[in-house]
Image 1 (cartoon, one colour):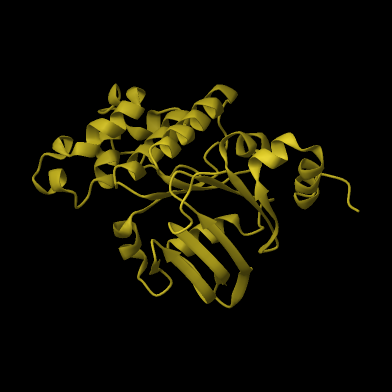
Image 2: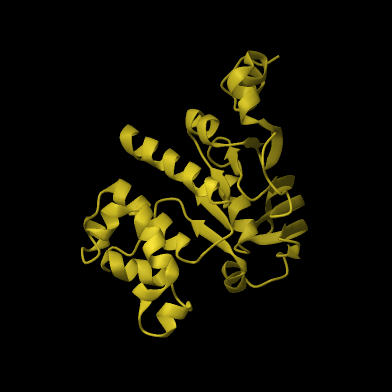
Length: 252
């Protein structure tokens, strides 16, 4: 039995998109504390739109997004991170001309230590850098000179400094070497052990099967398969259903 509280994030009947175009066609999903939930699907199927819907960054036509019992669809986007929702966008999106330290400080904006002019005194500063020792060694290095894997770690660390209860990650293993994929997987499991809820859009099926508790497959903005990752790992017939939903298995 997965240990989670489905009250952390609950999306129901969500239709959302851009302008007048509806990308999501009534999806429902949930994420609990201490749970990793994966969004799978080919490019253009709605994974990023689903994440941005939680953040208030796209137009919601119908449906509900509730975080810890609070409706998000009527809140301005800038207010949602303050409620405890963090975001690591696809492509890392660090500020290349700023130092690692300056990038990290953006995640502390408004926190007690930052307001007092002593950001390193904020309690989460040491905790987060403890997860990323390589960043501690490069605090004064320009972010644009980091490797792709280090930039991904920086983007995740910056989001964690906001003390989220729910972390949304868009393609966190994209473009990483296999060794760094493994480190990213370990990190996600470490965050899960800290009771963080994670909603992860992911292209790598094997990564999703290793780190996720539950999976949703999106096809043209609709959920076409959902289930426990353990079932898909251990039961050949369930894995076959998952592969068919992803369009990589034989259709019946």
